[in-house]
Amino acid sequence: MTSLIFHHYPNSPFSEKIRLIFGYKKLAWQSVIVPTTMPKPDVIALTGGYRRTPILQIGAHIYCDTALIADKLEALCPTPSLYPAASSGVARHLAQWADSSLFWAAITYVFQPAAMPQIFANVPPEQVQAFGADRAAMRGNAPRMSVAEATGHLQEYLRRTEAMLAHGQPYLLGGELCIADFSVYQALWLVRRVPAVASILQPYEKLLAWMDRVAAVGHGTSEKMKSEQAIQIAKETDLDDELLFNGGLPLTDYHQIAIGERVAITPTDYALDPVEGTLLINAANEFAVLREDERAGQVIVHFPRIGFQMKPVKTI
Ligand SMILES: N[C@@H](CCC(=O)N[C@@H](CS)C(=O)NCC(=O)O)C(=O)O
Image 1 (cartoon, rainbow, N blue to C red):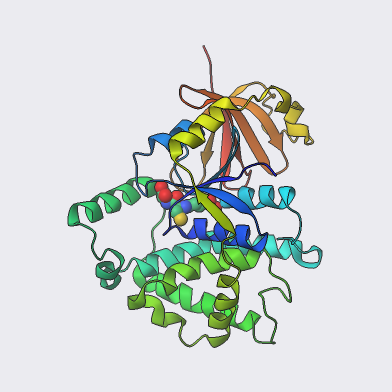
Image 2: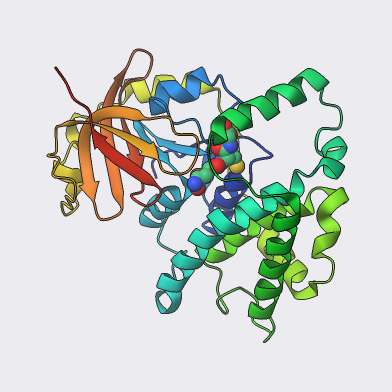
């Protein structure tokens, strides 16, 4: 199978979601560790602006956002499935809720002042400050919750999740793991890792046992790779044979933008850094642009439709 190059860092919950999916599908992957804050020159050489973590690289294809990365891994390795047929719709809805509402409640709850000394134990104060400034800039004007609200939301979400497990099923939607398990798990993984706040999980015994089952899936097998080598692989990949019309997918054009036009694709929630390029794929749940980078050569950067917006770039 094509080599899967995963750009991530150990403490990233969204990366943990994909590491576990590698484990579930028993995949081998190359591990490139990226910086936790900007600047990230090697990430930007590949993405053209997208700075969030993780990204998946396959040759000169760069997949942004874990929703699309999960779809790509499913296409490459359909068994075992992340989307069992009986619950694939509800699994995707639940995953989307977990990656947004649950994740932000968990992040806000975890990063409360009382937990900071544990989260940043052994980190020099200037680095803690730099991390805070980086995340404040990344979030821009995105709405913020207070710790009190985050705690209340998280408690309610935990009660609801525990209720999903009340009838003895091993996983959230029944007897099989699915994308929802990995998305819900990643946000709670973060909570469980910080002892100062992890006690919020204690009353939820079924949920804790479910977390242990998900963790037992493991991370597959990985080998370290340097970011320079990943960039070189992108550069050496010849894309000529891969430029199928719309990536071989049905065209889904709601914007009246033709394939081949210059566009910018930007997240709709935070880290609003546009990626500019030539539109190559405009499909039901995927956009992709072709861009040329000094270091990485020609790369194709893919995004899911949900969570991103596309705009034409006026060329004079
Ligand atoms: N919707 C995105 C969210 C990714 C995300 O927010 N990741 C966090 C880390 S877990 C991030 O990018 N933080 C800032 C950074 O790493 O630069 C996804 O599913 O991949």
